[in-house]
Image (cartoon, rainbow, N blue to C red):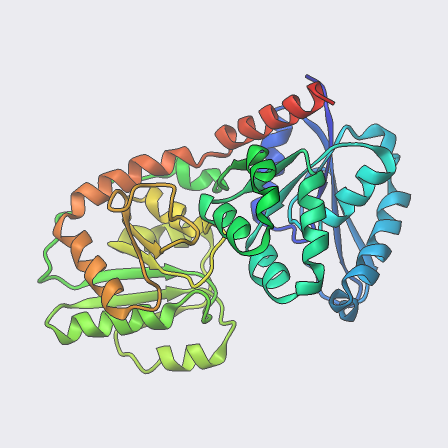
Length: 371
C-alpha cells in the first residue's frame, strides 16, 4: 500500500536515523519534521528526508502553548499537508500536540508514542497539561508504548477510569530496535567463569541519579567486602557532577566518558554482566546492545526492559533503591551464568529494526484502510 507519512520528532538522534532508514527500505514515503530552539546548539545530522527547523527560543520551552503555537505555525507553512496521509508523533506532548492540531485542521489520522518524559515530566509535574495529554490520546488512531509497564502506569496514575478501555483498545507495545551493527556483530562466547576470578560489571548511560550508577557501585562494594572480586566499568558522559564525584571514591570503578560503537562492543565482550537499574527508563537500547554480546542484564522493576521477558530469563528485575537486591541478583546470575548468557544472546534477536518497522507498517496500513 502506498502511503506518505509525516514524522514529528523534536529529539532527533541516531536512534531515529536507524528508524527512518529502515522505513526507506520498506518503500514508505515520509518527511521528518524536527524542531529546535534557535539559541540552542544542534549537531547537523545526515538523515533521510529530514527538515530541521529553528522556530522558538529556549526559554519558551517552559511556556508550553506559546512554544507549540510558534512551532505549529511553521509546521503548517512548511508543507503542503494534502500530501500526507498520516502523522506519526514520536512523543505525546511536544510532538503529539502538533499532530492533534493537524487532525483538527485536516482530519488526517495520527499515531502517538508515550515516552519517559511524557510520564515523568509532563503528566507527573505539569499537572495543568494533563487535560491536553488526555485529549491527544483520545483523538489518536493508535498509541504506542515502549513497554507494558508504561501503559499501566499511565492508566493507573493519570487517566480517568472511564477512558481506560477506550485507550487500551488502541494501544500497542512496540520496543525500539538497535543499530544493525550490534546484530551483525553479535557474539556468544560461552564463557567459563568462576566467582574466584575478577569479574566485570558494566553500565552504559549518562552518569546521573536516574541511571543509578551509584547504587550499583554500592552493591559492588557490598559484594567485594564479602570476598568477591568485581570491577565496575561506567561508560557515559556526566550529567550530574555530584554522582561523578561519589563514583570516584570507589577504587574498583573505571570511568569512560565516551566510546564509539566499535570500541563499545569490545567493552561489552570484555564484560560479564550489564547492570543498569534506572529509576525511570522508557526502554533502554544499551540493554539490548549488551545482550547481543551474550551479557545477562539487571534492570529496574516496572521500568524499561521489565515485562518483555519473564523474570529470571535474560537476567533479573530489581528494586533500584535496594542495594542488597542488586547485589543478590548479580550473584544469582553468576551461579547459573551460561543459562543467562545463552538466553540474552537469543532474545536480543527480537529487537531488529526490520521486524519493528513491519509492525509499524501494519499499523499505518490498518489506519489508512479504515479512514
